[in-house]
Each structure stands twice: as structure tokens, then as C-alpha cells.
Image 1 (spheres, rainbow, N blue to C red):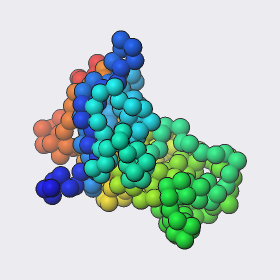
Image 2 (image 1 turned 90 degrees about the vertical axis):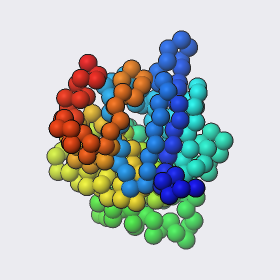
Image 3 (image 1 turned 30 degrees about the vertical axis):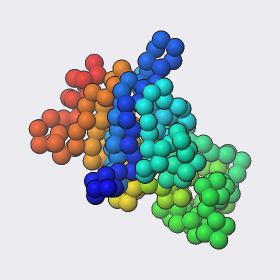
Image 4 (image 1 turned 90 degrees about the horizontal axis):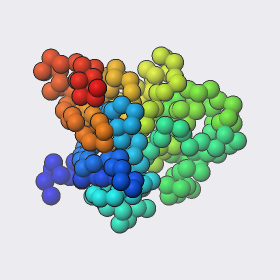
Length: 242
């Protein structure tokens, strides 16, 4: 195995998803490396959500394969998902639990032992700015703090692959800045896929961009390549998705 191959944390090959005669996703290929933040962009209906559901094992592809850290997601879903963290657009929170109760539950679901669970809880609360919120009922928290809890549940087990769907939606500018800083931090040791409609967010935190349109990937370049060409992300996005 080469060093380049070893650095791969996620590899999706020829992903397709059909609903009857309608093809929602067609021949999508995604490769993610440790230390990389990939921006997954596209207009509404482009197939991003369907793609992310396949990448996280929540939806089986009609054709294609997904490997997480070299483990086939379809053949060994439980083993593969140990390396995966996912924040959907609507965070999967239990509103009547406290932050500590909920995150400990998530830790156990990710097979973190009881001996290690408290340390994992303390660490993730510190990283997500939740030190003072542990005993608060989630339903009483602001939108910004609930979003932080959502990110915390996705990373409490230190996954190699982190997939974030609109992580800053509904946040104020200060909260957005803090979450973006956290995403950059996560991208140092893990591979991160960020799906968002906020192009400035992609420019701020992403190393590479893939744009989807009508179920297919129509653009795949690093931000450095894009900047070298003197093109703006907004102009490229508009040209390819109108």
C-alpha cells in the first residue's frame, strides 16, 4: 500500500441512486484524505443529501461502493461506522435529555468504554465550547448551542471521517466564526466533508471543492488551483449550475 493510498479515509466509487425511473445520483466519485476539508456544493436538488446519506450508510446505493478507512460500508457497516461521524442538517438531538446524558449515550453507542467515556465527554465539551452546558436540558438551549451539541455527538469518538451537513445554518456571525474555526481544527487530524450553501464558508475552511449539479459532479478542484486560475468560486458555481 502506498502512502497516498494509506492517507485515504473515504473512497466512494461510481455511486448511483435510482428511484424508479429517476436517477438522483449518477456516477459520483469522492475521495477524502486525512487532513483535508472537502466542500460539497450544489443547488437544491443537485443530489448532495442523497450522496451524503449513501456515504454515511443511511441509504444503500443502487450501484457503487463506499469504503471508510478501507472498510466496505455495505459489507461491514458497524465496523466502518466506528470511523465515521455525521451531523445531518437537523441534528439528531433528544430535547428532554441533558447535554451530558445525551453525549454519554452517544459515546456508548460508539462503543467507548465506561472507563473512557467521561474523558471523551470532557474533551468534546471543551472542543465544542460546551463546558458550562453539561447539566442543561438540550431543549432549553439556544440554536447555536444545540448546533454545538450536534457537532459534539459527531466527533466524540474521534472519527477519521466527519461529514457535516449545513453545520452553521441559523447561527449568528460570532457562532459561525467559532464553528468554522472548529471545522478547521477537525480537518487537521481527520478528513472532513462540509456541505453548505454559504460559499464564503467554503472559501474560509475548505481545501478542495466538488460541485454537484443534476446528480453528477461537475467540478472538482483544490481551492489553491481555483485561486491560481484567478476565478471566483461564486462565478464558477453560477456558471456550472444555472
